[in-house]
Image (cartoon, rainbow, N blue to C red; front, top):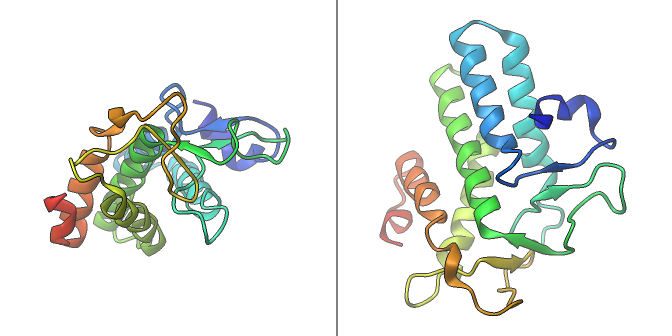
Length: 178
């Protein structure tokens, strides 16, 4: 995956959370393999990929959602589709960040900022869930539904594993109840 070399290439290539590149999942597997096979170089690469997204994808304090696409040297470097995030990309990527947090915790390496990142997004999910229990497919980075091509509550299933993981890590009942 292109994300394996992300820490060395920031500014020179396109990086995305999308289902094709799966950077967060690749980072988790690098960490897991690095830990089980005693490969510190894999642990460092996996850590660097996760840390890049944790440190940079919430581009503003006002952003309720993280960006899901890094454009490298093109334009302002973030977002192919300005100020919009697909719920699936963010939910699946954040889930893998929490998996990495859990794995690293088992090896005695604390990354409280990884958990805080997951909680920031998880808390937004709790606040933005529709009365019928659904979520839209796309949102602005400020957290408002993007209704083009129209209201699409098709993103509903993607937050579920993330919310279950957050409940398991934090014990916060609201994550389970949603």
